[in-house]
Image 1 (cartoon, rainbow, N blue to C red):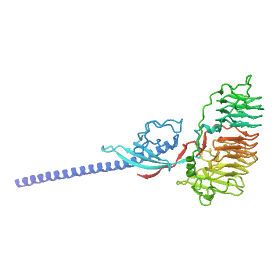
Image 2 (image 1 turned 120 degrees about the vertical axis):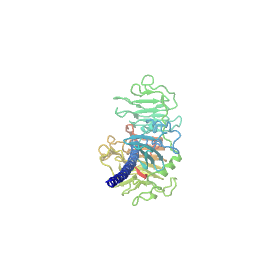
Image 3 (image 1 turned 180 degrees about the vertical axis):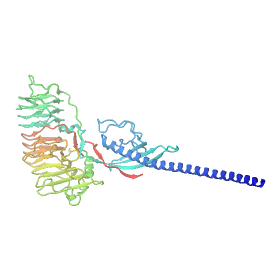
Image 4 (image 1 turned 135 degrees about the vertical axis):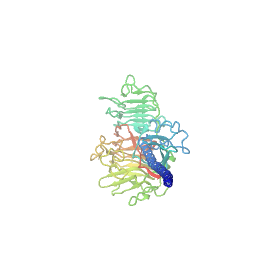
Length: 546
């Protein structure tokens, strides 16, 4: 019996040891399971955090694209707050770009966007040669288990594609602007029945002969006259500024040198319709000023011309795609020297085509002539190292960055046609020639079957600009809708009619010339002299790292 008790006691002891062993093993298993579960949870969270950090970084890149899309100047290197070593020295207070636009404020620190789940820290560096932004965006998300936060950095390239039209920030482009300052002569003479209803600025003297006048026929198109020299009525002049019957006063007249009669060298007086001078001078109340401050106009230097030659989207250096005009059509060599032996005929009797693209595949240059329909499709800049002639009827319109005429669009990317043609030599529109723009409201030409319809053209969204080193001639009885820049002479033939701004060294006006009113231009073609390129559209980001 005692032995049985001893055996039972031994079994109870063994059971206790066994139970303790099992408990320890189970405890270790539980700990292992808990630790494994915790580790798996941490790994899962870290994986999710990495995905979240990537998403945050991607959101930062998208925010950078939105900033560029809404910027006053997407080419301004301050816009995306570049960091050292690419940080501008004036990052704390960069100037407005373009002038008059909202200031960016302090751009020294990167953007930090507080997003759902974390932050995105963003900055970008602009390369003006490629017009590419290199954007760096770091997404960061909090680690709930403590320790270092999870981050992910992405790098993306955002290309800025220039819009066909750029914001006009040059006041001179709202005038017929004449720079000639030769003393003691009539720098601009309006003769016979020449009638200007466009705003006129002259650095020198303005003279009237016979029944010539400058007047305002529509209050919606105000006319401003600014004469830095004298306003002179030559012998026999019977009209001048405004109209007496019916009364048509111009909006403003700033006459720096006063008014005179008979000759430029005669003594000037304050302009007045009252006796004893009785000037033919009708200006709206408060519109006359004896102070005529200078308006700055573009000055195209030899260096500028070289730059145009190098950067034009269509030229000998930037040839047409396969099947287009030969490069020698634009220049016989590869030097800007006005050497093209034959005049470039913009409107021959046969069709031609030319298209160029950038590295992203966007059309940046287009010059296509449909001889049957007299239709000129345009985009970008052309450089011709010689002379240009225009014959017959021309109806110009635009194409977008895909090379298509975007029927029904608002004209912001090509509907009406925006082009600057740089010409080393001269430009001439033959007698009776008709050069008409586009009506982007109706998506039709401003050509009415025989002449240009000056009420139909929409110049802020349709503008062909000639920049000619040797001067421009618009022949007798011709019609022209466009813009002209030349340091030489603008010669308007008898009975010619024009609408559009011009900046010229001098101007010659034939009898019965009409220069039509032009509304203030909000936009100019890409590459207009003196006007900075500020309007660009960001392409979709291309990720290069991350």
